[in-house]
Length: 127
Image 1 (cartoon, helix red, strand yellow):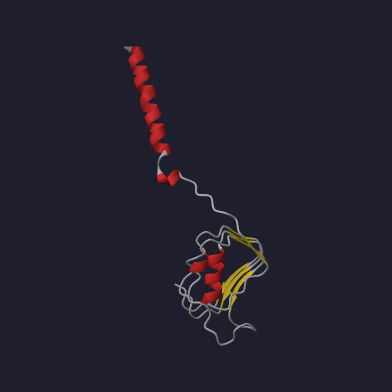
Image 2 (cartoon, one colour):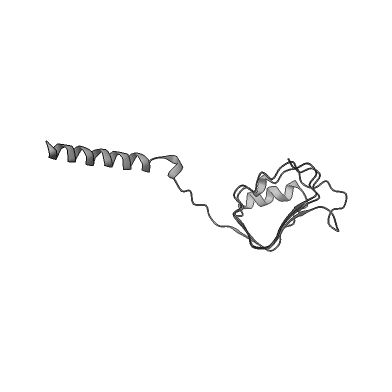
């Protein structure tokens, strides 16, 4: 009788292990690393879409979404940064400023590291 109990416990343990290994939340998805060399300073939504199409995950430089002080004086900026969704690392600074059209920071969800300064200022419609 004791032998059957041990075998049953063993089988239940194996089933628990197998069940926990099949959960979707435990699945690790590896993405290809694609590096953008140099500073990324998009001038409009089209530039951001091209960044998305390029599949870039790392910017080896600065990312600047700044639409004043010598860049695009009267331009309202970009309306969305969702195209940066694949970005996981910026080796330099991240600056987001003076975007009167930008509604949220959705798109930076996967950003894990900024090697330099992080500056977010004067974006009047970010909620």
